[in-house]
Amino acid sequence: MTLEEKITHLQSSSMEQARAEGNAIIDSHRERLEKELADHKKESMHQSKLRIMEEKTKAKLALNQARAKFQLEQRRRRGKVQQELKDKIFDEAKQLVAEYMKTEAYDEFLVKCIRQAEKYAGDELVTIYINGSDEAKREELEELTGVSLTVSEEDFIGGVRAVISSRNILIDHSFRTQLRDEYEKFLFLGGDGVA
Image (cartoon, rainbow, N blue to C red; front, side, top):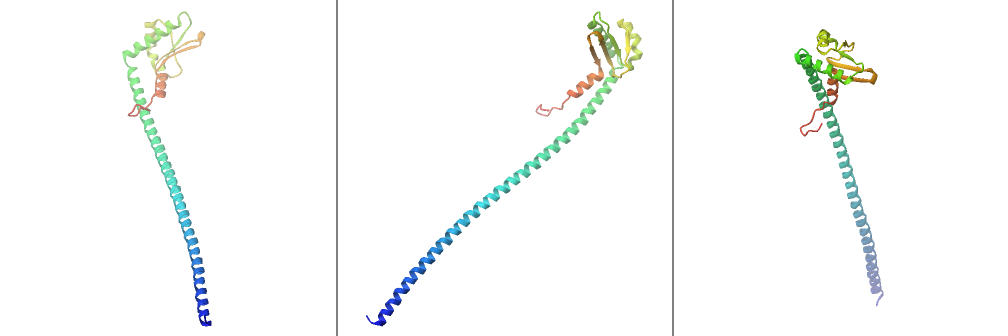
């Protein structure tokens, strides 16, 4: 082999080896970059999913807060309207009571309550009160029942109250108490029977 051939052969071998090493370096670098790209894509997808889940959670929370606020406002409005209607109903009830107190049935009710209180007391001393608005009926009621009546200083709208002091008993057939009790118990029921 001549020197010229040896140089060509050496040059050719060196070039092949350099190309092989270069290609190996390029392949290694390409693999590393592809792996980094894949890892980056994977991490980006993971971060995107986390952000989406976070945003969904925030949106659900905001929606739930808005819904709760709306429902609370609806309950307040409904409560206010119900209170207004309840007050109106009981104002009408008081007017009906006032009309009832002008009837003979009311006088009979007073007599019945007085007799029941007297019977319940038996031999014990009982003080029977009528309302100030019924003072004009006092004499007639005393004649009908044979019981001495006291006109109450406290306005209890109408009806009768009796006190048996010896037993610490109050018999309360007053309209004020009955209206107050009904007012406190009164509930508007929804369409499904739920208050």
